[in-house]
Image (cartoon, rainbow, N blue to C red; front, side, top):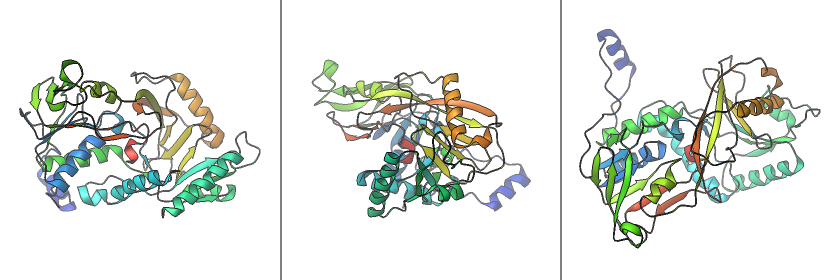
Length: 384
């Protein structure tokens, strides 16, 4: 085990309240060095976690995390904070279940309440074929030791009383895949926790530092980049930095960053929109997902309903919200829960998702020595 972050406690809270002292910053704003052992591009969940575990588990702390904006300003702070491991393939189940394990101990590991709530996860089936798929997924999950099972409409109603399970609806609920270990996490707290933990290990978190180019020598492509080359560092908006290892942990810009090293990636970028309502009394105790209606919904501890949908089909780097999305989303949600028709929408937002042809991430080494990638997570990055 490595260094531990300073403890938050009730005693410290009382002391600061009585003395009116300032809380120390959770992470510093250090001056950038001219060289590091590792430079990580992207100050989101994956970039900060990579830095933290390099120091915590491997003793590598001469590391810089660079982000052109602020940490958590991309997908890590724009997702709907749902976590689960009830996937269809054994590999996916095992991989994402490890993520759930990490979330279950994260508050203690990072000494920060990430508000992890195992409230269960319902994937609704509206057709016979969808119900067969749910049975298939349930059996795959059980073989991997994952708590998942198919339940009928009456059990769905008990798990989520606000859902309309009557057979006369336009999209009748024939059953659902029930996954009790699933739930939600406060995404901002996860980012802050990893940033704080990394800072304790003297890792440099360099915000508002844009990577302009990746320095590669000896490659087979133009300017010595590409296969056979070797990383020498990065050029940033604050100056050049030498480093033998550069890790691309970006989302939304992964292919553009990778092109700087001469390593093309099979990625297209699409926006994903979400929305949240005004708060109300908590009535939805579980996460609800409908693949047929392209909607998922959960309720926060403060009472807001958080909605998401599928990625926009047209690739773009724009993150503008659209009225078309809001209208379509509201219609689909009301098909499931007509009782919330009087609730008012508070705001909507959008983020960028890097999609691969097989919806699997791209991780590991590349043809350029010292250039590694952790990208292409699509809509699953926060769960990993």
